[in-house]
Structures are given as structure tokens and as C-alpha cells.
Image (cartoon, rainbow, N blue to C red; front, side, top):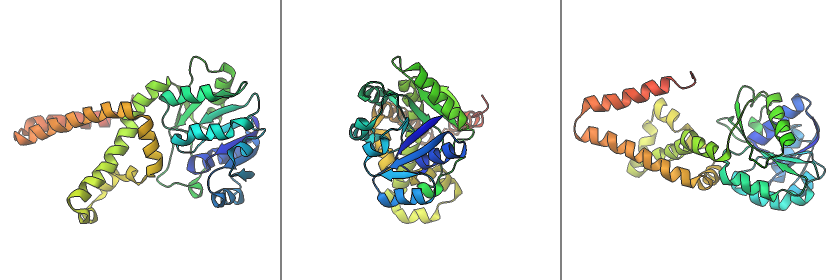
Length: 283
């Protein structure tokens, strides 16, 4: 499908993307770029990429497809540094979990003849880095593609076809609707998980030694790297401020039921949540 692909950010997602392309013979050459030459060298030694450069512009030279898989807060700067190396007809996409205004900003930055199509594969792992990269990471996963009214239709078709070829189920969505949905079902839960750990530590960090499987399951995502989630939350902060307010209101409702010793109302709130949780994935 592509002659040369440039992967800017060769970690779990970027490395898995490269491996999946190679396994399915969807490109002839993959160039990687990132901040750490040691990481890039390891990726090359593992056969994830064929060449590398710490200069993203150099990695992008003559590439038909450019994948942004760095933390989304660095997308704008990465494009500024690399756009001079984009060839006419190239397509730029990404794997970022925040879209919204960022999609429109990136779209405006594209040089003439270069198309940008936002995408967000809903795939990941508890582990990060190239050692956890897997060619099957996207198999059966949702991939949200976020075109705009100005998106090139042929480029959009190619990106949709690409993700389907990698085993993903593609859903097209407005970029701002994407951020409203994933603010609630992904970004807010991450903030809550981080805050749960900090809440225990605010009382007595030694209590963490007594946590059971339930606490570990609930806070597993607090093991995600803070640089990535700082970027995501700042880029989607308007939605998150609204959503934190709703969450606080729901916590206040539970607090009121406890203060009033209203067991029936508390049970009703818990039961409603249980039934909604049981319905996830059945619609």
C-alpha cells in the first residue's frame, strides 16, 4: 500500500504499528524517529524499523505515510520540525487519544499537496515501550478516524482501508465529539485513578501496602506515564473541567445519602451503576 512509512515516536503504539505494517506487507520501508537514539537503535535491531534518525524531518524524507505516535502535546512542534521533509502526495495521521481543536490545527499546518487525517486506535497495554510492541495490537480494536469538512476524500479512504487492514474496526467521528466521548470514558477515569492513589497517600501512604485486587484494578491506569496524560488532559481541559463538575456532583449525592443514613437511596445509586456497567459492550 505504501512505499515508505515514517513513524515519529517508536514506542508501544508506534512500534506495534510498524510491526503490523510489516507483518501484512503494507509497506516496503519504515523509518523511525524519536528523542532517544538508544531506543531507535533497539527498534532497528528488533526489526521494527529499517532506519532511524533523531531528526524527524530526515526520517520523513520521501515518506508516503507519516504516523505521529509521540505524546500529543508534541504534535505541533513535531510537524514544525518535519514538514519541510514531507513530499507532495504524502498522508499524515496519528495515534493520539485527543483530537478536537488539535485536528484543525494540524490540518492547517500541512504543506501544499499533503493531507492530514486524524485517527485514534483504541488499543494499548499495561506495559509500554518497544519491548511490548506487537503486530496484533490493533486486531479487533476500535479505531476512531476524525475527518473534517476539508479532509481529502482519497486520503481518508486510504487511512480507513489501512486501519481495517491492520484488523481494526473503523468508526468515523467528528473531532470534537471524539473528545467529549473520550473525555468521559477515558480521560476522566485516568484522572480519577491518579487521584485515588494520591488520596490514599494524603491520609497515609503506608495504607497502599494493604490494597487488594479491587484497588489495584481500579488504579491500574495510574501506572500510565504522566507526560502522556498531562498532554491529553491539558488538550481536552475544557471538557474535563465540565466532567469533573458532574463527577463531583455525583460524589456529593453519595455523601448526602451517607450523611442522612439513607441506605435505600445509596443502594439505588449503586444498583443503577451496576446495571449500566453490566450493559457495557452489549449494545
